[in-house]
Length: 99
Image 1 (cartoon, rainbow, N blue to C red):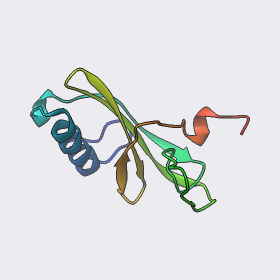
Image 2: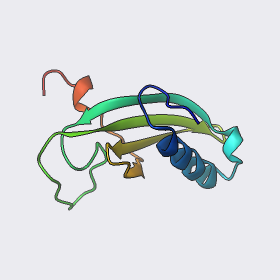
Image 3: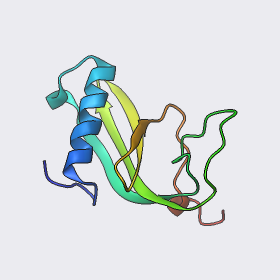
Image 4: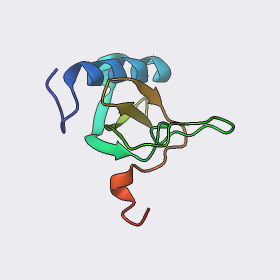
């Protein structure tokens, strides 16, 4: 798969597979809505969990939004390719010019 919006194809493939599994659909039924390079404000990658501590440094990465099984799903990733499903996504630093 080719890169979309600067997101590596292998990362998109992994995210598409995860989304399909979560939604109970085939991977070819997953539509990519947004795939972009972003800067996260810390190591939580915009998916902070209560009680967790995160690296307090800017983290280059990606935001991918897909539609699967009629549901929008948010996945946040680091530049290294580590990604996570994000139930309550926070916007990347790029979307918060005043922060």
